[in-house]
Amino acid sequence: MATKSYKNFIGGEWKTSSSGETFKNINPANAKDVVGRFQQSNRKDVNEAVSAARSAFPEWKKTPAPKRGEILYRVAEKLVKHKEALAQDMTREMGKVIKETRGDVQEAIDMGYFAAGEGRRLTGETVPSELTDKFCMSVRMPVGVVAAITPWNFPLAIPSWKLFPALVAGNTVVIKPASDTPLSVYHFVKILEEEGLPPGVVNYVTGSGTGAGAPLLDHPKVDMVSFTGSTETGRVVAGHCARQMKPYSLEMGGKNAILVMEDADLNLAVEGVIWGAFGTTGQRCTACSRVIVHKKVLKKFTNLLVKRTQELKLGDGLNEKIDVGPLVNEAQREKVHGYCKIGVDEGAKLLLGGKPHRAGGCSNGFFFKPTIFGDVAPKMRIAQEEIFGPVLSIISCRNLDHGIKIVNDSAFGLSSSLYTQDVNRAFQAIEHLDTGITYINSSTIGAEIQLPFGGTKGTGNGHREAGTAALETFTEWKSVYIDYSGKLQKAQIDD
Image (cartoon, rainbow, N blue to C red; front, side, top):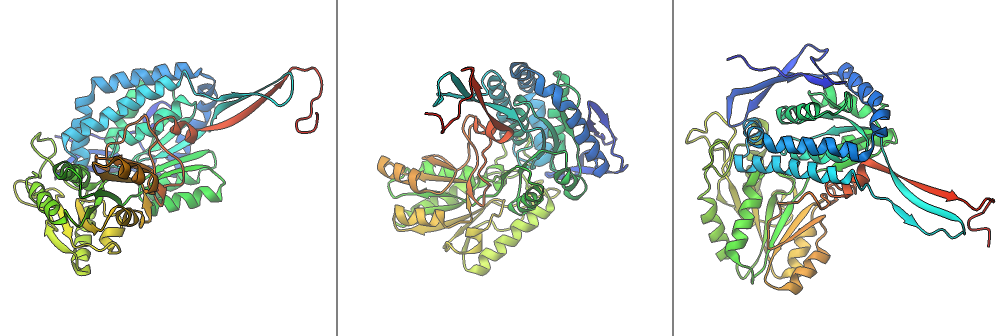
């Protein structure tokens, strides 16, 4: 059976790259399975896509926001209709288990409905003037042409976080998905086209970071960049945008921790840690990679955690009985394996896993055993650096204050969690944990689209995705003063 080839979408037309080259999209559960071939785009393709977005912008901006929202509502409805097929393709192209890819699609559906509703709000403010016969208000204006660069771990949810708010606010977009997961974004763009999005409003180019990503960052007609990915690449994005005085939004790494106090429901905490550490095979920016446990329950908690983790089933995520799928590619598996060797060399105690998994039909995929390290010191590299795989470090703490200090001793500040039965401790943690997201008696993963998503320190640059906060990213404020006094009034000068 011939491998299907997919095209770029530029100015309302599906086109091959001017490079004449394509790349393969591989199933990480079975490297012999080629999901599809996609365009290896270059600067010429990017120029064409940005020009199309620039040409479409005036008319799309002029389209009433409620009408823009109606299109997005129809898109969400079609995502509902095709949810299972989209989830099946997503599992095949990036590996996470089918229950999670259904959740990924659902997140895009939720964001579609939410953004559609914002088309009838897009709220500004009206405030009193200090002068008589004068009216003051603020309104939102679209930024212009947005470049959206998205990662592979949430191939539909994260693109929806960017496209839906950007579009309802009146922007046009050029999206470049990660090369490991272009199919899910292809489906998304195809649905946008089918539901009546005007030509040029969304443009889709695939390819490498150097071939397509860098020209998109550098393009003088791109007004704003929205990026989700590694901290290393985020620094590059920031540099490019800063030199051009161009606004940018970064959502990057995390080294997220769950605190387990001595009064916690340990069975509940174990389930939360397993979900946080090994869901999506640890390939989430919000993944729990550190669990900080009160010394009084450390031994009991560790035994429960290891026993429960041993029960997890690895394999092809299309199998409903599988708990943990593969890593996304061989390079990621080598990176995770390398960190496990570092952990052993640092003196941490390897309690479980620590190596690739090739048994039980997993020989052709990029599988890695769920891994737990004990006796981890807070300053070890495995406790400080983002691994982005199924590797968990157990750290002991003396009390809540000590635990919070360990959590905050990180270059990142995305997500945190506390398990306790003490409401006073819960509110102390909420106040003192230096992260953009905090959970109480729940894991570090599970964000909902109606609240802001993002973090502090090295996790981002102060912007947030999802919720109404996303509109802050994709709009500019305009303050409006209307003087109907019939005379010149001088604010701060006239009495």
